[in-house]
Length: 84
Image (tube, one colour):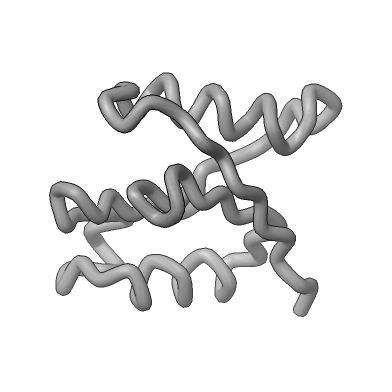
């Protein structure tokens, strides 16, 4: 199992999820064209995904799911407001 590389991203707290995801992709690197979002957590709204695997919607479930499915990157937005 490979180690997950963690990046920190600071952005306006009102930034929409789609824009934060776009910024996270840019942070990881423009040469990484085939990135797939495996799991995510929104601490403000206490929700995350994938819902099928993490019906109890906890950060621990989302993080475990991503690791188990080979996640190479993790982006913590605003100190944990979002985890991508």
